[in-house]
Length: 524
Image (cartoon, rainbow, N blue to C red):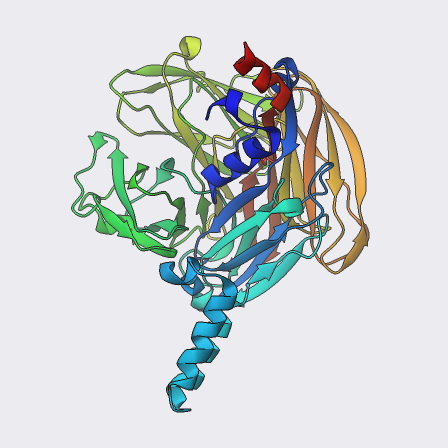
């Protein structure tokens, strides 16, 4: 994009058009101020994808959607999530809504008032009906779905709902493989993903869920890396994901090799998709494994529960270079080195796993992994267990991106919600806002100071007079970088159900060049 030829309005519009469903990436707010003539404005259009929640008939799923109040946002707009299976066909999307309605009416008239005409009209109404639609910024809304028929969702937001739009699905499975609490934040489409911590072992049932938001098919390669390098796959290349549809792929069907710890690399040849791994275990329940942050020489895995009974770190470095990772735990008192796990050796191109035991020992904690000089990029995730043998539940925490400006966690309850915040490199001040409840309640805000090198489980605010669930929005006020995660927990039949979601920046703001500054360049 040529910065010298776009006006302020045209620049923002072009950015929104280019990204389509994907959220516009917000640069460092300070960088916007340092750049002469640049302004930081709310994004005008964004999109999110939610994978199919479950294949269990016992599943109970809650979808939640929310946009925080953003100063300077448009006063109009929409935020709508629809079933991926209910999206209109490509030729219908190219036409206006009025034309589509007219087409359906004409078709019905030509059906000689038969049953087929009635069926077409009914299906058309269902396809246009949103699963979830926001009514106003600052107030979350929810929808319920039961059983294996709960759909994957595709959504867009524009205008006043676009900046900071967040969606979450939380599923409780009462029994069977993967029983427990499973949660995942809906994400933007992209072209590459890393998932360390998956498995093709016989005790696990792991799916890679691929969701295509676009009008054309996407072509995806799925690569698997085990303890000895890349696994031979039979059908992992050239997987086609149809337009506006979701495709769950069972990892164990891609290879004959059964391995406990596998790194999944998703590469999109054509188009773009949303991707997440659903990891289900016969004995220890299951949860979603979101993508790790991009390969880096420094990683932070925030918010390991203080009562974790087992922590297993899975890491992978692309390429041929080996690396010795320095391991530290950011605890409430500061950075410490776990005894016996001071450094971990990774061989290039091979997945490595390390049992860290009861790492947190009753205190809040986050893992900080560092490669020497940051020269070798790494991806990583931890699998966490809570509870005693026979009544355990599992969850995953991948390496996370920092909260640069603002991030939100949804579906919080007055009891069972833990907000964990870490500032591994320097002290920080944050502001946390509890939104209105889905069924009532008044927003509340608190400010906290996080000491350098520590992790704090903070006592987050709860809306006054809360009814239903609510959103927690974290904003960085000074210092940093800051990483955060949210844990939801409950107990069912003596089993400690829980799920953990990291809070990446919502990328709700974008730097847009000033028109007069750009034109002056042309005049010179």
